[in-house]
Length: 417
Ligand code: EPZ
Image 1 (cartoon, protein in one colour):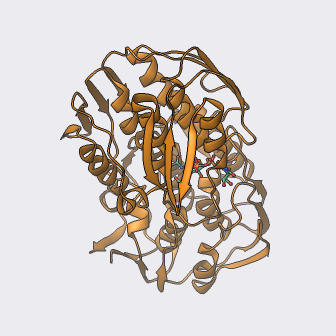
Image 2 (cartoon, helix red, strand yellow; image 1 turned 135 degrees about the vertical axis):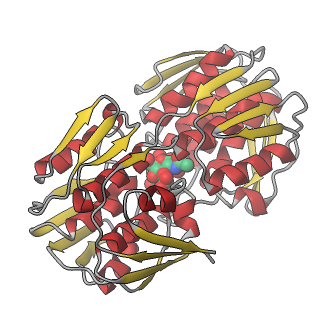
Image 3 (cartoon, helix red, strand yellow; image 1 turned 30 degrees about the vertical axis):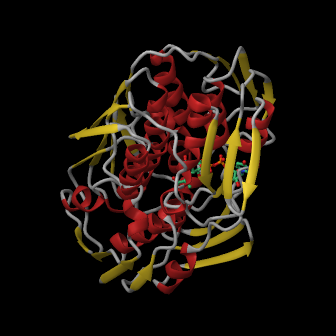
């Protein structure tokens, strides 16, 4: 069991470099299987999900060379074998092997994906999309066997602009005859990042990043090269930490356009910051105003910053409300925030009230999911005294080198395995 230990309430100054985006990298690595034989992925984050993905890729016969933050993937001997449950349940993104292996081999056998327990998280939209392209889907217990003699491009309308379904159908459409059009597609930056690799391999794709994406199938692809976009959620998390404890804290490597909703919101609540190219400089704000936040799909306020933002709003002067519209079980972190001295009330499955400002006190807490863990990490950094965060594996799943990054700017933080 991994624990992060923090002695809180230290002002932070210096520089934090943002890593590559988890939610891009976990799609780009499986997508490399579509290349002629070789791919290079640069700026890969140092997080646990990558280790599991490499295990699956090697099981599928890929040779992977991991040098610094680059992955050199040789897929010339890729083979199609069932992906065992013990690997696919480690993370949500294992579902991307559905689209990739369907496009490459017309068959995939894999269990229901894992991932943070923040709601039901069905994959019905993925499945409906595969069926629209001509695939047959069998579910035996919780294993999916998806087969297609031939995938044929179609117009597919998504019932909800799901990130995972948009990317998975884009991947499957590479192996389809003719043109696939995805309507009501998700517009998150991760989709643009994945499309950039496929385009680099020779796939014709129009409209990635918009509500309508057009993919022209192509089975004769080249090798691929791509750089993982900076992680917008990691950026947002450190910006929130800077607003609480920063002394001209510099966060380097951000893409401003990817975090506009957060920047607008923190400006509205009285937090000052300066942006110069890919660097934001931010300092502690003593008069944070309360606010109302509604999580939405991109470019709206990201659900993955909802829990870190909750911790920030425990320090706001007054009552704030958060409406979580994407997941029905994403307030579990508030139980331990309240044990640290915060006042938060779950009004309904998707509405939370936060009353501040409250002084937080260090204690033993337990991370229940990735961003919930981040919310407790932030609380521990601002709290008086020591905090021990149990189940910190969750945090390491999505925040590369977090302990050193914070230690280098003055935090009193350790990790114990
Ligand atoms: C991606 O999950 C991210 N994960 C999530 O980040 C993020 O919260 C989410 O997008 C929304 O931005 C990865 O990229 C690996 P969705 P995904 O499909 O693809 C419902 C983190 O902390 N839905 O856009 O699973 C679903 O239940 C993680 O980094 C269906 O009903 O998200 C949810 O309520 C957590 N049927 C909503 O749509 C489907 O077939 C959004 O899901 C698919 C989704």
